[in-house]
Each structure stands twice: as C-alpha cells, then as structure tokens.
Length: 577
Image 1 (tube, rainbow, N blue to C red):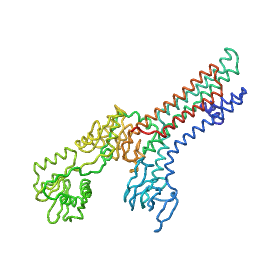
Image 2 (image 1 turned 45 degrees about the vertical axis):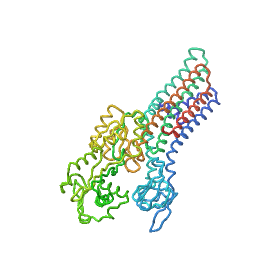
Image 3 (image 1 turned 30 degrees about the vertical axis):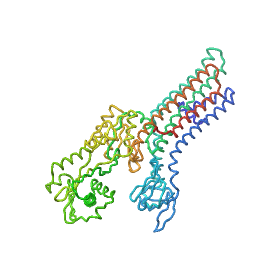
Image 4 (image 1 turned 135 degrees about the vertical axis):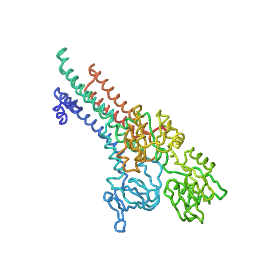
C-alpha cells in the first residue's frame, strides 16, 4: 500500500499502484476474501521473483564460498593460521594438498596440480611450478605449495568476478529495456481500460455497478505485469551465471543478448590462435656429424641468449635430453644485433642466427638460401648453425597452434559466422596459420592501428567480434561490437576492460557463448509470449463474464511460476558438442 500510494501520488502507475487499487476496490464492494487473496498471492509472486534471482546469483556467489575462511601464513619465521581477510599482499602463504587457496598469488616453491575450474571453467587440473600465477578458490591436489600473496581476499579473482557480474546486471539487455518501457505504457493503459469498464457500461447499459466494478478489478489483477517484468532479469542473471560457471565472464546483459547477432569474428594470432611461444618445427642436418653433437652446440649458444627463437632451440635440445650449457663451455660469447650470436667452443667459433650472419664466414650459397626460402614459405623463422668453416644445420622455428583452435573455428564456421585472422606477423605465416585452423581470410604485417582499421571496416557491414590477448589488440577490441579477452585469469586488466573475458585460453568457449546467447534470447521470447498470452486469454474471459478475481490472482501467480521456472532452465544448459 505504501509503495502503491507513493506511485499514484507521483503519477507512476506501476504494479504496486495497480494492486493497491485492486485490493481497495475489492474491499469497497465487500469482496473481502478476494482482497486478501490478491495481497497474499501478489506477495508470493514477489517472493518467487526474489528467490529466483537469489538462486541465479547464488550460482555466481558459490565462487566466493569456495575460498576458505582461514589461511596459513608465515609470521616471524613461523607458520600461523589466520583469517583470510587478514592476509596482505606480499605475505608468504602455504597451502597443503586437499586445501583451497585463500588469495591469489605467485608460486615461490613446490610443484603441484591445481583444480581451478571454478575460475576458468577448465575441466582438467593445471600443473603449477615456481613463478606461476595461482588463484583463490583453486583446489591444491598433489603436494604442498608456498606462494606469495598478490591480492587480498576482498580483491581476489573470485571476488572480482562476482563484482563484475553483479555490476553487469545493471547493464540492461535490449529485451529487458523493451519490457520495462512496455510496462510503463501498458500499466497506465490498463488503468484507463479498467476505469472505463467500471463506469461506461453501467451508465450506458444496465446500471449493474457491482458487476462491472468487479470485472474492472479483475482486469486490474489480470493485467498486473509482475510475470512480464520478472521474466527478463531472471533469465539474464541465470544466463550470466551459467556463463561464469563455464569460465566466460560477460560484462553485461547487453553483450549476452548481442552475442547471438555476431556475423563476423576477427582473431589476433599470437597468444589467441597460437600458443605465443615459438617452437622448433624442423631440423635439417647439413653435415655428417652426430646430430646430438650438433644440437648440443646449438643449445650451448642458445642457452646464453634470451631471444624467444633462441629459447625455442634450447627447449628443443632439452626435450631430447641435451643441456648445451652443461655439455659445452662457451667462450667469447657475443650477440650480433639483427643477426644472431657467436661463441667459441673448444677452440672453434660457432654462429647461430639468420642468413645475414653467414657473410662473416663467406658461407652463403644458393643451396642455403633455398633452404631458408623453403622454411620461410612454411611460415617458419629460419635459423642456421655454422662453424667458421661450414654450415652444420638449419632450424625452422614457428609458433605452435593451440590444440583447440581448429575445433573452435570449425564450430564458428558451422554456426554461419565469418572468421578472419589479423596478425602483426608476416603475411605468409598468417596465411599458413589461417589455412591450418580454417579461417576464411588471413591478413599479416598489421600494426595495432591497422587491426583497428580492419575491424572498423568489418563492423560497418556486420556485427563484429574481436578476440585478442594483448595490449596491442586493445584498439581493435574497443572498436568491435563485442571485444573478447583471451586468458583473462592471467591478466590484471582484462576483466575490467573486455566486454567478454574468456578466463582461460580455450577458444571453444567462444561458440559456447554464442550458443548461450541464442538460448537466452529464445527463453526471453518464450517468457514474454507466455506472460502476454495468458493475460490476453483472461482479458477475454473477463469481458465474457467467465473469469473471477480468484482465477485472476491464481493465473497471475501461476504465470510468474512458469516464466521463472523457464528462465532457471538456463542454469543447466550445456553447449552442443
């Protein structure tokens, strides 16, 4: 009553005003039982709305319940158990097997597997070693880990996810805005129809004031937009909760609904389609010497250099059980900018680098140039190992494609989306990677502003998404209709800046998001049709004299139950295989 009278006073004819008038009218004509039932069932409808939203939000807040209340922290050389809220950034924290992490951090010592499905949606545990980032709420499965806290409990990854989703609820989806706007027009119109029903027929026809007023009050109860209004937020919040459970953080209902409209998706290459970590793809020996000896020499030089291509050679040798720095001592080590590295091993000078560096030994030949061209054609960065007298081996180093990239892009293509690769790498590499994963078009040699230009051009024709993982992708991500950040659990700013954040590096979450968007919109439409259809039926029954106020209140509450139950189905939705 209080809310209803305030609304009427301000000429805001909402559902509280509508129900207050209906109850008052029922009392004035002596329909006490109907008046009581209207109030009771309206309160039940309100409770259903609150419970359904709480259930949907509870699926999100369950993330926070996974973080323990206590943490074991090192104080003055001793381990003490303290409240998780008391842990400060920089504290040294210990987590035993079977325990969950209380705060985010970086591993100091220990090797273990963490189940971080609550954060990233990954089904398999992830191996962690010193230097790796770990997240609150993760379950330690194998052995003790010591880590340095990089967040407080209030600012941990689960807390930030919950905050992001709850703020997303204020970003209303287009359908929700439509329903709210519709209700603002619909409810006053119902008042006018009910008033006309109560006054015009008795004056113009038979003078049966009681009968027509009763019909008018029944219309008011039937017309209550309660079910219509709650159908959209319940569905949207449930969709956001399902996405969060799968490691997809959606920054607003508007993006959850817009996902179904995507027509084109542009991808960054490095770190998005590929691992972002060069690996040796090919090795060709150009000498009769023992391959392990040649690889050891290459690794000895590569171990001294921090360049990613050199690291790839070191890791390739290590994978074959060869540690160059331990097996061969390098003297007079020198880095040649833009060429490679030089060092002396057992009195002989060796060079590891690109073709330009061979000029110092006059070892360039058409054969070597052809081999370099062949590796470049395959999208590899060619690397040569040579002594001062002869060329020993050629290495083809290239970024490796993520295991799920091809599957994800095939699924996007099957959903009817256009797929484009935008890369800063050379065009041949971009084309090779694009062809291998199945994108419909690939462009290379692009600067960040050029990526933005292409996304801008695409967005003028199609609803466009952009997927990237780095700061250099930010201009294109901002221009796209929906920006997707990859591996957001590993970056501090992705959750705050992206429209949608994929919490790990699995691109298969992208088609899952689009399918979820389509399912969410389908349920939104179903709920609106259900709510309006039931009201239309009872409107007709009322004018035909076949509906009572009892029937009206039960129909209204029943409709609330139907749309809420339908919306909550999204909690158990799964993407197609």
